[in-house]
Structure formats: structure tokens, C-alpha cells
Length: 165
Length: 165
DNA sequence: AGATGCAATGTTATGCTATTACATCCGATT
DNA sequence: AATCGGATGTAATAGCATAACATTGCATCT
Ligand SMILES: [Zn+2]
Ligand SMILES: [Zn+2]
Ligand SMILES: [Zn+2]
Ligand SMILES: [Zn+2]
Image 1 (cartoon, rainbow over the protein chains, first blue to last red):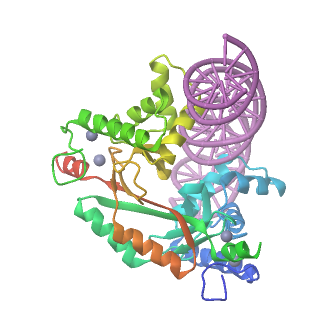
Image 2: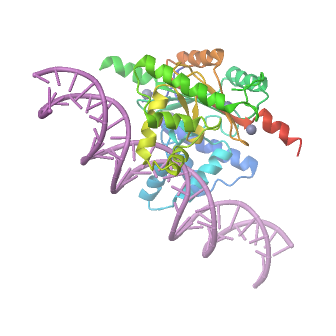
């Protein structure tokens, strides 16, 4: 992803490596679990990874159409369902969009930080935070299935640009 | 809301009191801040408080239509925008729906627990959790504007019913 | 009173997001 | 070859949200 210590991707990081890495991980994971990373699924994952910004289903659909495929919504949603189900991408509820997961296949609760300005999203997995949520749930005898934590604001890159302008 | 120590509302709690309380709070708050709780806004808030389940905009719209009002989507969304902006209701992103806020007007970060079975949503505001998120954000120099924490699972009432069946 | 300004609401149309239902294809198994 | 099941294709529709512009109604100023 990024070379520096800050998880927010620099504009000049080698993004091709991000994509290659994500696709390689996906292939490994699917092979290990007997899942079929079909051409469509693979291509959708690749499109999601074109950047670090969550992408909408119809955005993906239009890009596929531009390549000549002309799929219909269910095709894209089915691929997205597969990718979400097998933890290769996260759904970003506050945006109705999808972003590549950085710990593919690992059943983790992610916290997603999304920049209002540039749209970049970064994922974190703070176990302490996650356990605190579980503890609070237990306190009211609520059985947790899934937790969604999404934080919006301004990313460090955009904050820098701010005081340049 | 509920008589017991568990924040999940019992089936036999006096829900009329919830609604009355919410509307009274809203009136007080709007009066104090010079806001106009117009008939539509008030009615939408009341409909949201008809239960403890998040309600969709079109659900509200249909109920208004059934009463003879026949509003159009923008009317409802404008009322919802007002209610969200002034912190009388929370938007539940994972459901595209809206639920009454139990600390109206107070700028707090809420964690919302939603039952997959009965749809009831309960709000919590754990300051420790909230500060942990802020700390994590600061760690990457991310400036937080808003945090969304939504937890889905099975509420205590539904868990009880479970082992009856 | 009449003119002006502003917030709220009404109206029409449209855009974006997601799913249902059914048909077809294709590779693996028998 | 027949069968089966998962993946994809196709058409229609459901569900969520906003843009753009018209109108209303009330408060303020002249
Ligand atoms: Zn990258
Ligand atoms: Zn940014
Ligand atoms: Zn109640
Ligand atoms: Zn329940």
C-alpha cells in the first residue's frame, strides 16, 4: 500500500503493487478454500482496487461496459456478493460502495476511515475497540453478528493541501 | 423507554410515554434554539417514534399518504434532513432508515445496536469507545467529522424467544 | 396597506442503488 | 449421453434519494 508509517496512501506510492498483491491474495485464498475466482469476480475485484476509494456497483458496471462486456446489475452485484461474503472486499454502508479489504479472508471487524474531500478510505482493525463493542453488547445481552464502524473526516493528505491553498 | 435495567424495550413498556417524551423534548429544543418544528416535521418525528425500529423514508411517506396528506419524497426527506441536522433522529446507514435519538440535541457519537430478527434498534453512547476511535484517528492524523457505529445481531428479547420455540 | 424577503412546502422529473424471477450456459460426475 | 449444480445472462421492477423550479405564507420595512 504505502511506504510511510501513515496508512494513508501517498500519491506516489506504487499502486500497481497494491493491485497485484490484492489479486494474488485473492487467488491464493480462493484456491485454498475451493472457491472459484471467475473472470468476472476477478475483474470486479481488480476494478475495486483501481484506487483506494470505495467504488459503487454502477461505477463498476459502467467501467465493465466501457470495456465491451455490458453486464447487467445482477451480474455485478453477484460478483460483489461473492467478494463480500468471502471477505475480499468491505461494503461501505455510509457510501453504498465497496472497498478492497487489506486482510482478505480474515474474519475481522474493520474500522474504515473515509476522507470527505478525496474519498480515500483506509481500514484499521483495533482489537481493543472491537472487544469494547462486544463487551458493551454483552452488557445488554445482545448477540453480535456484525459490526460496522465508519469514520468520516479529512485525511492527512487533504489536511496538508488545505493549508497550502 | 423501558422499565428494566436492560435498554432493550420490553413488549409491555408504556410506549406512548416514549413518544410523548420525544415530542416534548423536540418542542423544548426547537423553542430554545429558535427552530421551527413545523407540522410536517413534528408528524415525521412522531411516525419515526411509532416504535423503536428504524423507519425508511418511503415507509413514512406511505403512512402520511394513508392519512390523506400525499406528500412527495422531497417533503419527507426535507423533514428528515431537519431532524437529523438538529440531532432529533439518527440515520441508520446499514438500513437506509431513521430512528429516534434518545439524547436529542446533544452532539454525541452513538453506537446503534440493531436486531436482525425484530428490527428494534437501541442507542448507546460509550465515551470510552468514542475516545478510542478519536485516538486511533489522531494516530494517523485523520480529522474526524462523524463516526458511524452500527452493530447487528440478536436482541435479548429475540434470544429468549429463540429457546422457547 | 403594499412591497419585499426568506424559509418552508409543493411539484415534476430523474438519478442512483438493489433485487426478483426466470432462462441459459458450462463443466463435473455418473 | 444424461444429470446436476453453480455461474452467468436478461428483463423487469422495487427501493432510496435528489435536482430544479414553482408556490405559499409569514415577518419586516416603507
Ligand atoms: Zn495503492
Ligand atoms: Zn483526503
Ligand atoms: Zn418505547
Ligand atoms: Zn429482536
